Length: 233
Length: 397
Image (tube, rainbow over all chains, first blue to last red):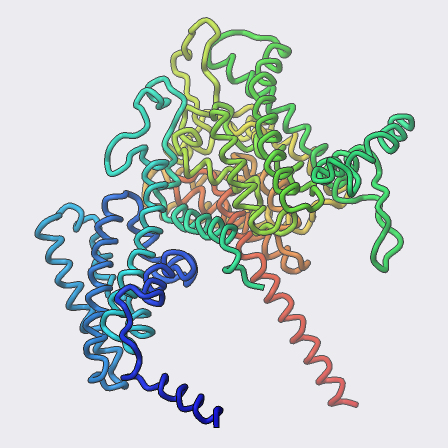
């Protein structure tokens, strides 16, 4: 008798509408935000979105603008697709996702052109290429299509931050070592340079894409050394 | 010697043994020990007889083969320095000046490289491997004499960490570490690695400047920019041209090549086919020179093919770098292809791209990437051939 009762209780728990309402920042939801920052980082663990990480990390400022753009597209895209998830026919879902992302990117592109024209010129084709950024498509496909709006929003924000901090970290080292500046401000004193009788010279290799790849590689190395969960057998 | 050996065995050995205080530093101790004495490690596999030529002896032979280029390089540095500032100097002065310039480079290269290698061995707890001994000698020889030492140190650190340790240490590297160091310096600090200012040290002792009409460009640099050079093919053969420290003298390199071939350490297949590749590309350029896009290029293309072989780092790269057994092809047929393409591409890059007059570095690094692919096809072809033979046999039987 007791068994049957217990089973009934379990069955009750499984019913969706009977579940207690989840707080906005429950443990699960916080995990959605935190996981992409480290354990499940889109760039260093899933190795997605590498292309833009290599191309626009020469300077910090464009990298920051790019991060904000991706943050907006990802959060908004996740929310919109999550809202529509019950109406999207399965067979054309990729096209629908693309339409959503493409419209958002067009919006971002126009805003950038209007307010930060020089950066938008510097980012050139890479703003448009946000459409094909694997991280965005991946999150829409893997998460937003099957989860509620709030969760999808958190997932979008989390992954965008995961993407952004790697981008900014790479750009930090590339700009500091490659140009001696940060956000365009001179960090390395002028007197240090060999041309001015000093001993220092900027590392031109840092400005080339291969060094971005190596910097990302070193970040992955450090991350795996500290986070043993990530090491495969 | 025997007394020293006994002293080390009885007094130093226990300090580093398992369970003792300095156990952690066993790899460092072991590295020095086996460098000085024949190691007493017993064979732990099925083989009971070992060749006396272990990795350390191999490396020592290569270093011996490098000594002629090192000594000539030292003299050449001094010779050009005194020529450039217009002072008559005797042989000894020239050599001494060069030695003062070159020895710190060698020391920095070994200090930084071995330091990093030791550090990794202690952290990872594995035996010290000797791979860096040769790279450490090669690196100063392929750098311009005026390269600031910290740049050299950074290049060495890059080559050892990114080029070697991340792949698993000696014997696991995809690229030749010495060339990787040079490539790093070349792309990171192009103004200190190319052009006409870096090859000859012109800092006069009493603030004297270079004599009039002095040009510090290398023979290759001359050809790439103007199509003519003040240096003849004989100069290049003897080595009295400006260039990276050890790469200039083909005679000194040939001495080293002789030793490497005699001891069988370097592959004659690679060397031979690389020279053939260079000759073929040189001949092609000679033939198509009239169709060049510019006058300078035409002049460069028309340079006799044998002169292309003695200029720049071609000889040095082919003898000491292309024959690296780790990063090169492993199969015999593969070695012919690998070597041929190195020679072929070196001459092609240096003529077609004046920005990279030193084509041999890029050619070897490129072929390092391709070597496994070459081997793969050689092995597949062999399998196919044997399968056909088997099919034929079973058909006739």
